[in-house]
Image (cartoon, rainbow, N blue to C red; front, side):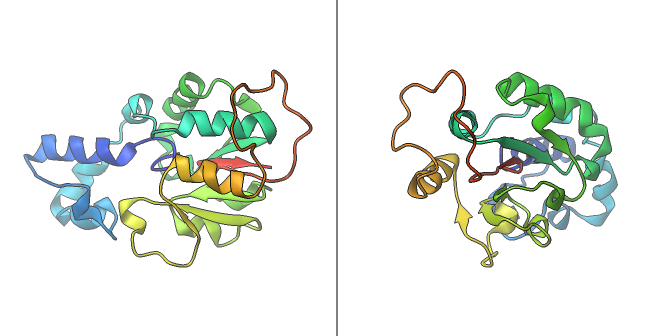
Length: 197
């Protein structure tokens, strides 16, 4: 979810800067993870900022809701989150998903450590490590930390995700009204932080 559907990084940076009177920017993180930009003596305190409420009020990335809604109208979309990385995040992430993506059934929300367990055609993620064992097609969602990654096709926004699936014929050229009940699913799209089959 983080950095694909939810803007967690901006909140991390905001909290870090407020706590330490620092001036870290998203550009400073280009090609690096946040912890690589934080002095060693501050890492433990910075990690403690990921309290159970951290994930509940994150901003939704632009166009994310609309594009996932469109995909869900034509495909089985699963949301996969590596919530095991931050175990205290389960409840807040689930509430965030229910609030912002009520059209995704709870049965299609997967909290896991290894996203390869999701049997989908596509996995959209910001972390290349999630593609290593995934059997479908990877789409790398741009984030500062993956700026130098060149092994996977890249999408820079949810508008580009929409264009990608339209280019495959997996979404109509223009969706003006969505069907009240989706047609029989075609195995075509997946979002990991949004995933589908």
